[in-house]
Image 1 (cartoon, rainbow, N blue to C red):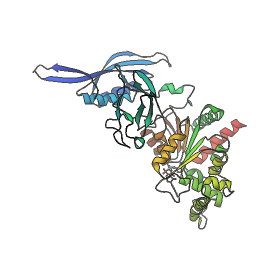
Image 2 (image 1 turned 90 degrees about the vertical axis):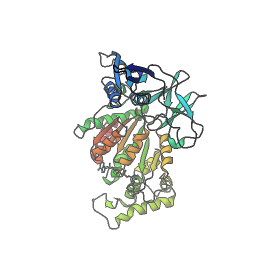
Image 3 (image 1 turned 120 degrees about the horizontal axis):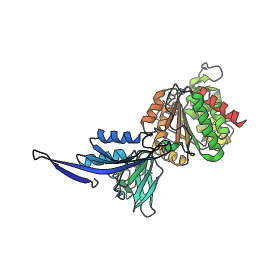
Image 4 (image 1 turned 90 degrees about the horizontal axis):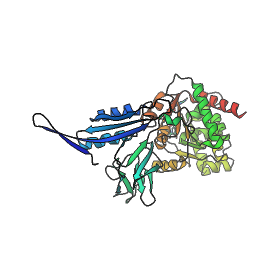
Length: 426
Ligand SMILES: NC(=O)c1ccc[n+]([C@@H]2O[C@H](COP(=O)([O-])OP(=O)(O)OC[C@H]3O[C@@H](n4cnc5c(N)ncnc54)[C@H](O)[C@@H]3O)[C@@H](O)[C@H]2O)c1
């Protein structure tokens, strides 16, 4: 619990009322990004009160605003809870102190009261200096190396006894993504709403522009894809994107790779002919026979090297040295030998592979979209394409609020995206 200003008021009947207060400040695009109303709402919802001590609202579009508030709560614990909640919106106490560190007492768990991270860029105060937290990720703790003056997000499972972990919110500050995100480093459509009724061509053109920018070396693209990419007959579109250098990293599960390879071996996806759309006799066995053949080869890259696998998404990844990670799930047949079946190990590998990703395109997978969304910092632009609006909504509800949703069938989406990129390439 932090030290707050304590006041005692005496009532007319001799009763006394104790309250605890702290002054906080907020700056940036706090009005048009709706950060100030959110902070005021958090304070009152959590049982506190506020007085606006000072406010300065910018007049022009790019002007920043500033507000200083006195927050009061009936108990110090209530005030701590409020300060922690508003801290996630970038509100910081005026009187700052260094962050508080407690050594982890066991492997694989934080000390009680640990600071729980958001996906927003965060700084922590060490010996009076504000230091940027590395590997920003939601739902982690922060491990500090006092000697090196560094701080980084660490998932619970990676904590080792003796690690210095931040507890409480003191000495931490968050920089929420606001309208600032429209700067030169972003893709320009961060703040578009999720809707099935928006002109899709505009969003597709924005995505194409983002991909071209990355291809020019100004970013790195992660594609997360589900098996509907193959089932709907759009694997050639994704293969083209990989071949032409528009994909820098691919994340998927066993199913995307399996059905892609099934199409290469048998011309089917889940036993359905990709040519005439009808089912093939004993086609339901094709994906198992495909997995078996790759397991016999030892890996997907061995199968490419041996000439066993000669086309498709996974083939293009191997040929063009695009790193991929296939994360396992309880539904998997086989699985393919490349699938990482230990979920924690898969998360670790994914963290390593996303370190410099700037743009993420998620297509037709709820499981992997949400999993990857949880790992990405909020500054990474995310587009999620799915036929079901609930997938996009779930992603945003679980903290990946920067996601732009496109509710559509993946096949026409990828076809139009490739058409746009082909015109530009020409
Ligand atoms: N045989 C197997 O080994 C096997 C089979 C299926 C899934 N799996 C695994 O299970 C896990 C979950 O699979 P998942 O990601 O496919 O399931 P999921 O339910 O998480 O996601 C499927 C998504 O595809 C969307 N979708 C379906 N058709 C679409 C279309 N035409 N256009 C756009 N979106 C469309 C759905 O709305 C849904 O959001 C994965 O790890 C996968 O590899 C394994």
